[in-house]
Image 1: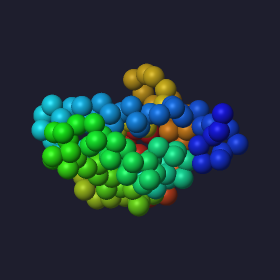
Image 2: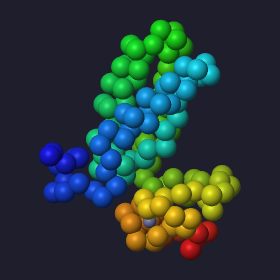
Image 3: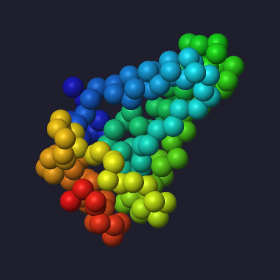
Image 4: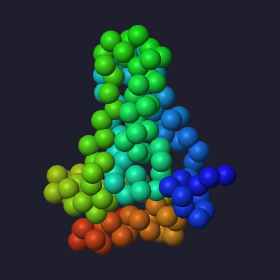
Length: 139
Ligand SMILES: [Zn+2]
């Protein structure tokens, strides 16, 4: 199997076609409620690893979703990714300045009621908060 972005091995958190599945569900919901936009939280760091967060992937996906629904096409459904040019630390910094309740965010790839602190998501979260100089309310 080819790995995303030519990595030697798949990241443990890799889920094949994750974003195609999630955004298809979001598009179905958008059609039902009459929404014209789907907003995703992917950042620049995600795009370095996962092909299904790339600009090209979203251009093609948006086109495919529109082509499968007259209602989405007529609303010119768009997928907006406002964080796509920011790294994780910049996202944390901005969120902190905006007063986002960071204690309610979830980064862990494991199941449970608390972050495991060991998985890739937890390690990236720890690094992002440290790089941003923002104390993580979960630690
Ligand atoms: Zn974790």
